[in-house]
Amino acid sequence: MMIPRKHHRVRSIRINRGLVALVFGVASVLAAVFTGLASVAAQSEQSTAEQCQSDSGDIFVWAVQQMSVVIQTPDGVIYTDPTGSGRRYAGYHAPDLILISHEHGEHYDARTLKDLVGPSTRIVVPPYVMERLPESLRGSAVSLANGKSMELGAIRIEAIPSYGLSGQAERWHPRGRGNAYVVTVDGQRLYIGGSTEAVPEMLALRDIDIAFLPLYPPYALGPAEAANAVSVMQPRSVYIYQYNSVRTRDDFVQRIGSNSTRPRIVAPDIGR
Image (cartoon, rainbow, N blue to C red):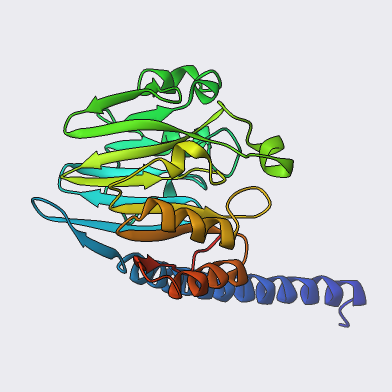
């Protein structure tokens, strides 16, 4: 007996669905494999760190993304401006101290902080950010205004004004709202610039071992301005931890290269 055509159609549809399921199954396996490979690649990137000697050991610095570094010291692990979820920091030691420079979304992300903050983690923030912290984070946070300082265990933290002097920099980073920080840890003084131009409070700093500088004109330091600031401050090392383009970063490096008192320069490739 001849089978009606409509049954053929139904059977054909079922076969196609099976093939589709098979294709999706293979695709899922391949995606998992590539995800695993990507994870391995990420871990290998995380294994590269800059190293400098401190009084009782070494300080290691990893660039995670623009404006965010992980600093491992003999006295604790410091994160700056972590964003992008806790998964981005899964390959690093958990933070003892988190420094937030200001309120912009690429520097302050409450959800990422919730992922990272443990029972003994302390967050240091400007007062403007403190007002915006969720209640669940306030118990772990300390508000530190420009010009104030504090100690957390063996780590000393000074809040240095970080702001723009004119134009777009001043509009987006008004004085009094954001912090740079001088962190003294294991005999080393680290200047972590935040989003700043070459303000007088920064230029007055001396005895800085590592200066973490942003290169982001017209909202923060430009290459010429940063090179001049380095010649005034004379840090032992300069770490570029934010830049708006590779050209900007390399322009700064070239300018410093002609400086007779050239410090050690670290200018890594940094992801967004």
